[in-house]
Length: 215
Image 1 (cartoon, one colour):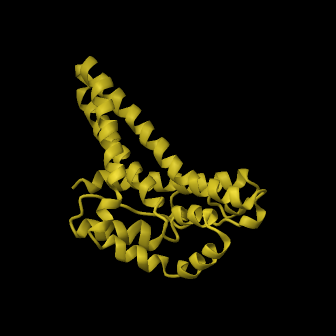
Image 2 (tube, rainbow, N blue to C red):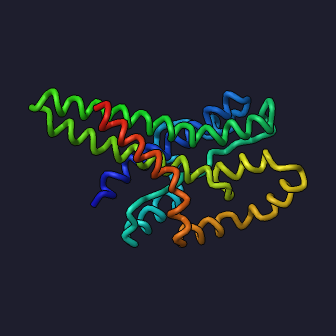
Image 3 (cartoon, helix red, strand yellow):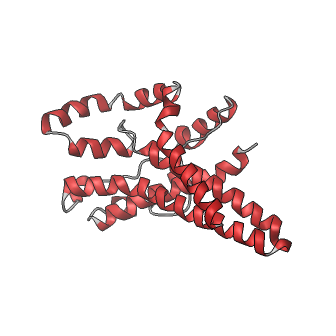
């Protein structure tokens, strides 16, 4: 039943991820997301039928020990960027960077929960609940950060990779982009998908160690 804890935090984290894309795009000169009403914490405009609903349910029904989801991509018009190549990378990095910052925020909450648990016994239950939810938030946001950095369209990592490729290679990359969703779906169903999250596992263990040491 861990998914009962995962889903609300996952939804919040995905919405923050998308808002970050729109906000940074606006800073770079493109207000498309703002005009589309996508720079909002209201989850409804961000929901993607497959990525926000069906994918989490599929992982729950298959007994997966982790969950992942994504929202509708925030609309961005690179033509409005002041520096298209640089700004596209910045906008793409904004989402994963936000998830990493949220992971650190949840780490801080977990430390606070541990301190309260030890110092104020009468608040032990609330402190323990805060710690558990915070650890879940850490885990989710580390997974989201790593997942979105995978260089497969339409994930953020693909935008970053494309901007770093030579012109001819970028053209070839655009040709296979139409198959990105299929490639991603196949990858999710293979054991290889689990190994992709090894960096997230390592970071999670390090942050858990920080909580135990500081808290």
